Length: 334
Image 1 (cartoon, one colour):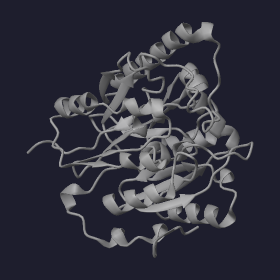
Image 2 (cartoon, one colour; image 1 turned 90 degrees about the horizontal axis):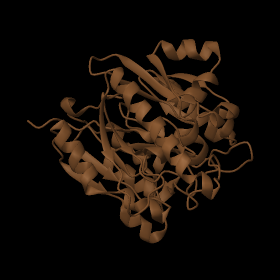
Image 3 (cartoon, one colour; image 1 turned 60 degrees about the vertical axis):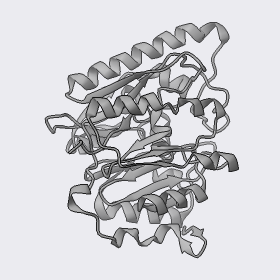
Image 4 (spheres, rainbow, N blue to C red; image 1 turned 90 degrees about the vertical axis):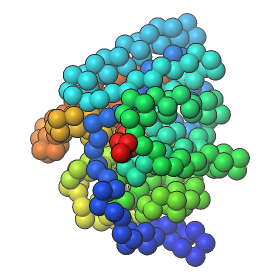
């Protein structure tokens, strides 16, 4: 559907026709990522109402769950570094308690034109995840040049949200943001993002097996170089489903996944590359196991599949491999 912002429909913004200098044209994959090592991981009651992939925990389980999440996180970092990815690890702080700190892509995104975006988040206990020292460490480790910080967080005062590259799946090359509307993804903030970043927006509604809104687009779709995975089954409106498919298929090989696979986090994958340029498709072990042989074969044409065991983080946090990664595309100084 086309969504109006004043007299200008979100899905037909003219920014794609504006010239962008060749040296600023982004890649779809990066070899440098940010991850946040959790200190207080656990079930977050403030996010549970809108994230139906979360599962509760008993109080006596808290320390065991925290330790298991740390093991899974550290193993993921080891695997990705072993594949040649540059991983900036920032330690979470114990106070205030931030159970979802290991999902930084919801509050920050880094762009090839030197822009950093800061995003409004629904849960109040997640807003403390936005820390200047995280940004400073990324810039220092990469010797990056930051041109501007675009801050959308004032929308929290109006109870309107846009949780970064969770709410949006970015086609950075073609400058299209795909977003499914839900309590964490608001039409007006999407329009603001579109105006200020020159991204076109394809907005749609997606629901799970219980016909409840899927909380983030990156749970049901992913975009890499030349391919896109998407759960078209979750987009119940025929016109919206056709719009999404038409847009993706213009530029990508579309690999359709089912809602059952979404529950295994098969939609929550991300394509990265090693510093040597080798393409990698990072996903959880459960997502990998949920892919039949033909889908694994099709994806493998676009990069090596890198499955990572994340059962604890998925079960209690309701997010997976892609949620844990904030990609860094900033330009180097000079």
